[in-house]
Image (cartoon, rainbow, N blue to C red; front, side, top):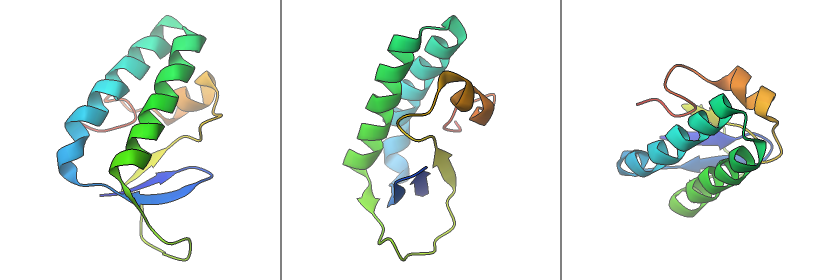
Length: 92
């Protein structure tokens, strides 16, 4: 799956990594619902770091369609809330 981190670029992730990422996504959703900005920020950075760690970066000139778009590291709680679906940022 091709994942875009807004403001950074794209990475290719194997589907096998999504169970691990969904745990962080669930934590992020709970922190957003609770309005815990400090925990939200920490978990957002952990999620993005994990995507960077597990994914293989695509070249900057690659024009692959992104199947998943994640917020920038400096996104606010409200900006991320606007991006959410019922499943969080990551479907499944």
